[in-house]
Length: 437
Image (cartoon, rainbow, N blue to C red; front, side, top):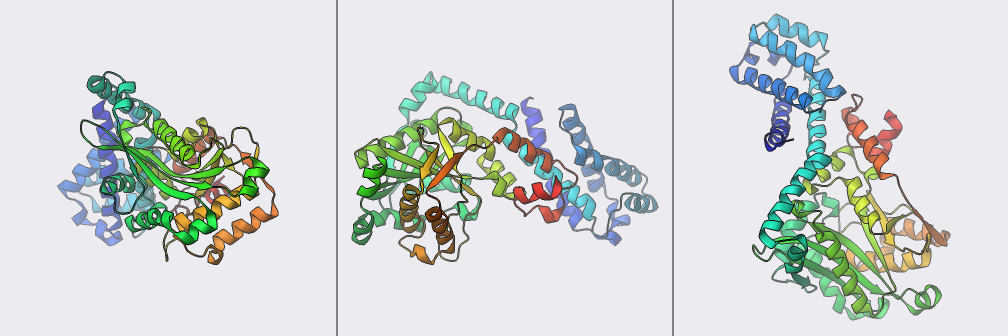
């Protein structure tokens, strides 16, 4: 796949989006003579040509195959300026007053191509090769590149470099319920000096570690994490001196698979161990759970983050993190906001097959009250109380492993399915699986 073919896929995505908007705007009576414009004929010709390019590239599915005959016949009717023929074609393909069937197909192809562009392995490999060439040209090796990255620690309100971090952060984490505000970050940083919370929970801190490319000063990636010293009963009973919640680790999409994420994880562990004075730490992290995301959320996050959500989970699995076997929900990050219901809670506990609920609850008490609710009353949050009740009723929570490869293929089949109707697009993928399969 060359650069021109990659551009064709991007161009087709944009064009289909515009064509879908055009069809949405035209009711049945508007399919008359005013439809026969040179611009519309040109767009249908471009659409058909690009579909042909996709087929030559091996990109096809049932939705595209169902859409093509309609477009071919419509093109022929428009070439002949035949309103009667257009009406016959609409009747044949059961096009409603607002062209809903064709509109659904077009929207679905847009989703499929967004998914294709954001996650296809061969496309990612091409981009990776370009990155490696640039790094080797500029630095001689990826090792030299990583060694040269400039490290900044942010753990106080109104830090002068915070804006640079935040600009990259909001471009990668696009779902509103998973974004904290600049004010929210500043409050969380400031709470580390709160005497009341320190008396209640002991040592804690929220930190950002950010790395910059030295020649351009561009932010390459960052880690956002918390650390908590555990109470003596946990230390004595389980041999765990502290916990950490890795809220985000992210890198520029063009510099992924270069070792930046692994480096950030190492810097995080080093900071936490040094602060708590021990290596006996349990590291927790939240990740998007594809099963609990809607199709639109899944595709949007894939496209903006330039990484498939299943592949993101694999990255953490490869570093020893495993999913905790209970339904995790993060309370709203600010008053009036929405809880984040599409997450898994994962933990790095290599020697354990299950984790004591006592540790999880001590950790979540701190994370929810300090970092999420910003010293809010967690007892008033129903999502926290439901999880607390579950954890108190189960002394151990098992670590589970999901077949992410199979899940990714199942999602791909759903997106490519002709049965994907509008009412399914906002449901969680888990609910869609139940209805479609």
